[in-house]
Image (cartoon, rainbow, N blue to C red; front, side, top):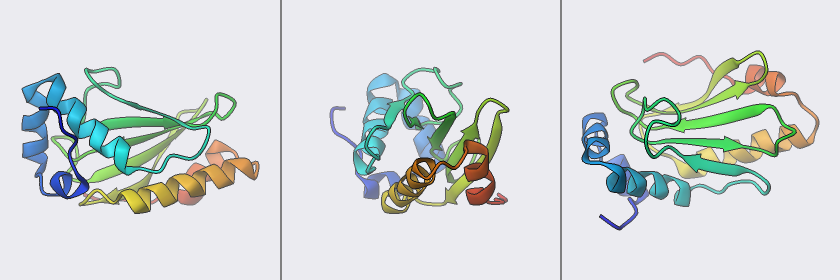
Length: 144
């Protein structure tokens, strides 16, 4: 498999189907992850890394870590539905105290909403807000 998954294709997959594709191996997982990365607008200066094996724990079929420059102590993780969660979830991890908050949870992959959220976090960082303040302000209670 050498093609990226479109947003529509990703949204048509059930959590079980996403897990099955992950189980097919690295090429399928790369195509899913690269499709997610291609659909997002990442703020200038940020880095994004997709999980290929189990670098981030291997909990989700698709997991991407987004980080601003090294002087900003936070990580955002975008995770697909699968065995752990039925939803697309973006969490913020504020270092060094490891505060984790859900910033976004939805049944479908909404790259425009997620890109807007990334811009909002970036703007808050540029305004001097701490990672903990961002986590507290933007974090939401999510039940599933």
